[in-house]
Length: 474
Ligand SMILES: [Zn+2]
Image 1: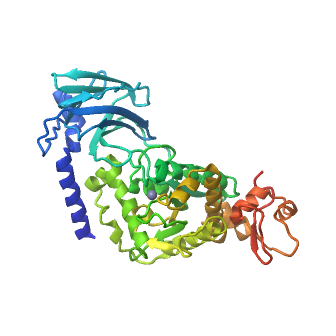
Image 2: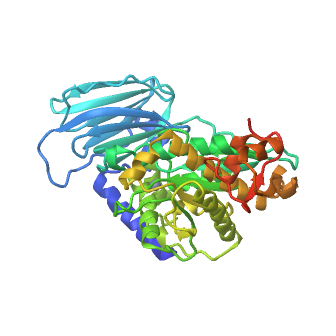
Image 3: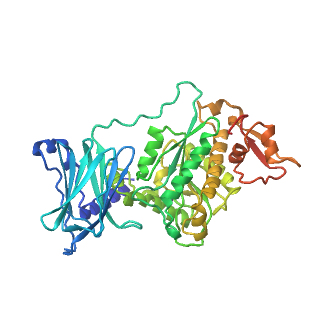
C-alpha cells in the first residue's frame, strides 16, 4: 500500500504543478490578517506560451450542502490570480489575458455563500471577477480539463468559515431503530459521468433513479433511506462513504450508476461488490477505473484527497483486502438486488461481479454498486431517461435491499425484532393473482410488487413471494 500511495501522491503533485494549484497553506487566515488584503497569489504559467487572448464563456454556481461551487468556463486553461479580501468579505479572481466571450452575462448571485458576482475589465488585457460573499468563506480552487459536455474550467469551492459541521442523523436510543440505507447517486456537478447518445448524462439519470429508490425504501416498514447526493453537485468518492458512515450512519450503502462501455452493444444491468482481488471481468475493470477516475475530473475535493489523505485513490483498482464478513454481506446484498432486478430488467451478468471501486471501500458497511444499464447503448440510454423505466429499476433495487435486510437485519433495528425481518413468505398456488394476494394480506399491490421486484401482474405457480407486514404502503 505504501508504494501505491507514493505513486498516487507523486502523480497528483505533478498534475498540480502543471495546473497552477495554490497550496492551501497560502490561504491561512493568519497570512490574510497580516497582509490585510492579498492571500494566495498563484499565477499559472502556460507551458505553451500562448499569446491569444483567452475567453470567459460563462460563470456557473451550485450550492452544495457544505460548500458553494463557482465555475468559470473558459476557452483555454485559465491563467489567473486568486485572493480574498475582507470587510466586506470577497474573493477576487484576476484572469490574465482574458476577455468575456460575446454574449457573456454575469449570473445573479444570491446563494447561501455568494451574495453577488461582479466583473470588470482590468489593465487592458485582464478581466476581474469578484465574488461578494454573504459570509466569510475559505476558497479552494483547481483548473479542470475539458470533459464533455464541459470545456476548460476554473473551479472555486467556497467553504463557509464559520459553518458548524452538519448534524449527524441521530438514531433513537431504544432498540427499535430503523435500518438506514444510504442511496448514492454517482457523479454530479462537474463530473457528468458517462454521456450517452442524445447527450443523456449519467449524473442526471442516476439521481432520478436514486430518488425513486429512496421513495420505495421509505415506504417499506422498518427502513429509512437517505440520499448521499441530493442535487447536481460533486462529492469525492471517499466523501461519499464518509457521509454514509459518519453522517447518515448507514447500515447498507447502494451506489447507483449507468456507465458507458467502449462497445455500444453491451447492455443490461449488473451489480458489483467490493473485490478482494480486483476485477472479475474486463467490464468490471473498465467501470472501476471510470468510477475511480471521477475523483480526478470532479475537482477540488478529489484533488485534496490526494493531497491530505494518504489513501491511494489512483491505484485503488489494485485494492488488497482480505475476505471478511463485510465482503460476504456485500455479496449477499448484491445477490438480493440482482435477484430483484432479474424480474424487471435485462441483466448483463447473472452473478454479482467484483471490482475495486473506491466508493465501496467502507470497512463496516455492506456496499454494492448497481449499474442500472449502459448509457453507451442507444436503446438503453433512451430507456434509462424515461421516468417509467427509472421507477421500475428503482422498485427492483429497493426490493432487493429489503429482501437482504429481511434476511440479515442489522442488530438493534426494528427489522431484527420482527419475525423474518418483517416479511412473510408465500408460495404461489394455481389460481392466485397478485391483486388477490395483496387484498388477502392487507398490503398494497404496489408494496407487494416493490418487495418482490415485480413490474406487472405476471406470477408463476411455485414462485415464492415475500409478503410485507399488514398495512404496508398505500
Ligand atoms: Zn458511473
